[in-house]
Amino acid sequence: MISIKTEEQIRGMKEAGVILSKTHLAIREILRPGLTTGQVDAFAEAFMLYKGATPEQKGYEGFPFALCTSVNDEICHGFPSDRVLQEGDILSIDNVVRYKGYLADSCWSYGIGTLSPEDQRLMEVTEEALYRGIAAAMPGRHVVDIGRAIQPFVEENGFSVVRHFVGHGIGDEMHEDPQVAHFVTRSRGARLRENMVITVEPMINAGAYGVRIEENGWVAHTVDGRKSCQFEHTFVVREKGPEILTLQSDTALDDAERAWISAYRF
Image (cartoon, rainbow, N blue to C red):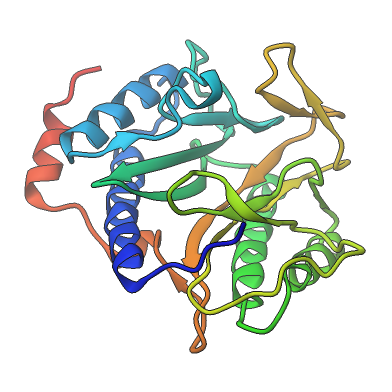
C-alpha cells in the first residue's frame, strides 16, 4: 500500500537525509586508490554511529554490511571486502540511514583517481538520468513518466538501463510501494500524489542491461563484464516540484566532523 507522508514524517526523513549526506561527504574525504571497500564500510558505519544514526542496511534480510560498495562491473549490492580500490575504478556506494526512527536512502558513485573518458561519460549520463527522472515526478503523473524521462536519454547516449532493479517508496520501511521503474513499462504504474516519498536510483550499464547475480544472492554484475554506475536520491513529490531530501550540496561538514575524520585511524 502506498502511504502519503505527513509534514512531521518528512521533517524526520530530511534530518536522516542530512546525516546520510554528511556520511557521503565524509567518505569523499578519505576515498583514494589503495583503500579497501571494507575500510570504507567500517569508516562509514563509525561515522553514522558518531552522528547518532544507524545503518539500516546492516542485517536487512541478512545483509551483513553498513554499505553496498559496488565496483566497476558490480551493478549493486556489492559486499565490502579486502578488495583494494584501483586508479580508474568506479565505486557506487549505496546506504540507508535511520535517525530518530526515520529513514533516508541514497547511492552515489565515485571515480577513484582519474577515469577514462568513457567511464567519466557513463557517470555524467547516469547522474543526469537521475535528475531527469526526479524532475518528471510531479503530482498527477504516473510512475511510467519517470522511466520515460530516463530510458530514451540513456540509450541516446549509448548506454543501457538495468531492468532487474527499481526505485521504491520509503517511509517506516526501507522498501515500500510503489515500485519505480527507470525504463518504460506497459503499465502506467501508480499515480503520483503530493507528499509521496520515493527513490529514483537508475543503474546504468556501459554495455548490455542484463544482470548476473552471485550465488550469495546479493551481488549483481553486468553480464558482459563492462562497467555500471548508479546514483540515487530520496525525495518528496510536491506540487511546486520535487523536494530532494538527500542533496549533499544542502549541507557541509562542520569543524567537529572534520576533526573526527582526521582522528579516525584505518
